[in-house]
Length: 394
Image (cartoon, rainbow, N blue to C red; front, side, top):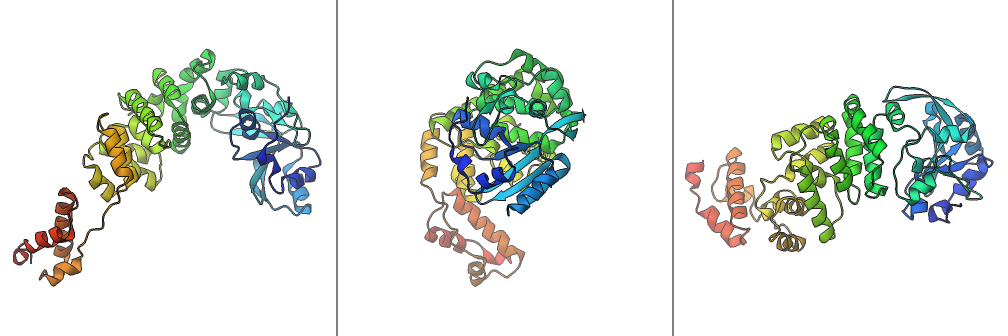
């Protein structure tokens, strides 16, 4: 079988890179897998039996910029006009502890492929002939949309505990509705070892899973196997129902999946607990803020859109609105632009309020009344301000 012609294989500079490696290279991993599935390829990875220093020397001679991004582990990165390409020397594992591996360089393609997690990720292709090399039945698994570990699932997980999370992410992205019973049981049995991993790695895989088109099967199986007890013990008891409803609503209203929106469906609805979880997962400040903005306590959708963003208000509607009200709320928000509050602190000072903290507090009082009354016109704001007793506020 051959790799189908693909736009990514015609990237500027890629042919020159292959030439510089003198035929000692293959495309590996996601680029091969996704091309066979007809999925857009983002990253291009190359494997080679050449040592990393040799690769760097060859690319330098060919006037190709190269960076030693992970040279101790055999990886360098070629900087091409259409994007970077990682080139990694063939490897074999010397030892592993479930979090990291000690490797030695190799010249054996099958030995290198055996290091990978799933059969569909162990495919490689010759850049010139496009011939595909399949050592572990990955082509058949890809055709049947089956996610299968290479060899023993328990052994692969023992090498890297994060492969439990990767299994469910790949199940969500590529799998059908049939699970490999042995793989699932190995994930369940080894799930406590996830607690040995950094929260950053856990969060990264969880968000990638939730960003897939439809993560419901994978998340449901993780809940069935009590795997969330070891990565997100506070998962809401209604998480399955809330996520199912959310994804159905996204699909019905043609709304792009969003990992943070879906994470909120899994979390307890208490804001303090949400904040603690977001911090424990080492999420960015922006992500932490986005989670707290999508709280079920926000019942005034326009006020939320004004205070945060229209996107946050839309997400709250998708997450928590009643079914009959949802279509109208989404349609309203789609065409709604948050208004500009028509008063400043200077306006209050002109009305006799003395400069100082009282100005900000008074302005906030007026603004909140304006929001509570549905953002009335400038005249309303002026009349409301004129009705305040500024003498008492000084």
